[in-house]
Image (cartoon, rainbow, N blue to C red; front, side, top):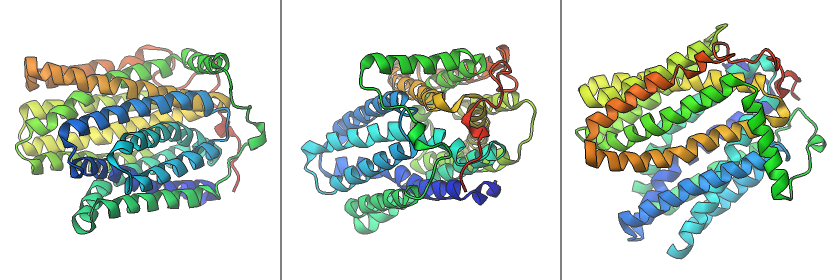
Length: 408
């Protein structure tokens, strides 16, 4: 995994984003306390979180339109700058501007993430993509463990304003490293940005066509959407209700994070001719997490949540690597954005429906349904062409831009 760091531009990219990921994981904790500290109450917090989810979807939709038309590094720079300024403004703004700043942060996040996934092949040779994606997952899930704890510690000792400035500092570090990153393809070769709805629709259509020509890609996206909206969203909603105490609830998420970190380490060393089959096994492991909440004591919950975290990470690394290798660079950003759009757009619906279903049917039935959906949906890619190998022979397994040697 560390071999990917020998490539200077990826090393700079990864270092900055590792620090930024800690800030990203701090922000939800800070935002909740900022809203509550201003005496806005739980209802206002619910509105803010709902607006944040919708804005993230909007940002991802914008990413699908522009990620392949603008330099990806430039998108990351401007969105990081926008988030840094918005987070800084949160320290001073009156309550009336809070929602607007949250919208800016969420839209920028939606634009940033697909660009980040699509720029990695421009900073690494194809043979190092799996290692680079594993390293990225490792830092992201390490931040999931560190970020909320750091936010809580800073807020307890210095208040929410200080925590906001720590978050701004992580964005500053990201900007400093991005300034020295170079993409392998000449930025002048990018197409001009679209200025009409018709051109944007055509660009999105090209992204959908790229998915349609790769049945394994579409099937895996559908499987992920089903698992995220019907298994993971209800599980996250029910977890604080099903665990006996806040300590047990926190321990479950710690186990999920630790399992994800171990999954990243394992994924870096996996060598298989059938990455699709291996990735599917990883998603199937997710079924154990909701089952544990319904039927097992805390030690069983921790074990199966940790296993689910490892499975999710293995799937993410193998799937992302396969997409970066199989999808042409000129459409890769749109494909990544469409994947994010599908997952993010249905997850809020999953939360909403789960809340209604819990009131009517109780938690155990909903958890069992979620486990069954994960077990049934995960194998969908294996029933279509290219599903076992996560590749499309007709399109060429090295069709993507990752075949070119990156700078540095």
